[in-house]
Amino acid sequence: MKDSGRIEILHAPTDSEPFIVLDKPSGMPTAPLSDGDESALSFALESFPEAGGVSGRKAVERGLVHRLDTATSGLVLIASTQEFYDFISAEQDAGRFVKHYRADVDDIPSCASELGGFPPVPACVRAGTFRVESFFRPFGPRGACVRPVAEGSGRAASRKGGTRVYSTGVSLAGGKSRALCSITAGFRHQVRCHLAWCGFPVRGDALYNPRGDGGPMLFRAVGIEFPGFSLRVE
Image (cartoon, rainbow, N blue to C red):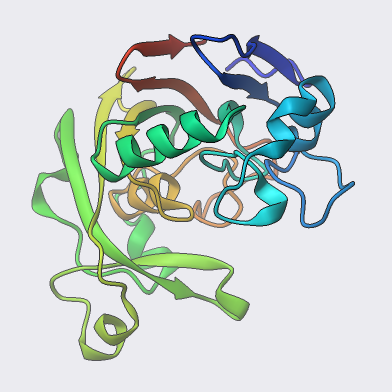
């Protein structure tokens, strides 16, 4: 699974496409906690200062459209104008901004029961292609992890779940050693948690793989698409 270990600019902003696409390495935060921290966004703002004038969800995040976990490598989209940020935010809300991920996975049918805190596994998830849906709730010390909330979660867990259903499309390949996933709306750790729930935790995932070997997490954001634009990487 490709991760060059350095950040790369895959798309520079133009008048007709006013956004930045970066290939972020594993280990680099997507956004800073405060101005001056090292992050993919900070790199983009140094390279394209005009993007610093965009107002996003948080002041420090400027035109950042979506986050990747620090351990996840791959594509990050950043708006360089307010007009594009407002446009892509509306596309996200309408389900027209699709993100694709690739994971090397372990086949551990008992993963959810070994980790604990999961509802019963949906019956369909051992098939080659399937969709997983749930609410989410924080789990573990200081909410470091998340757990799905679905039918069978129990009253206490259900009370902690949010109000939005999150969906992950999964296609298994390579004899169930690789998962290709897609989402249109993302919750923290959504794809990683859904894969673990289904019995296919990401290799090297210290939070969601009970057989973790201390190696790197083999999880990568490999594609983004929205009306008028599509990009895929290895």
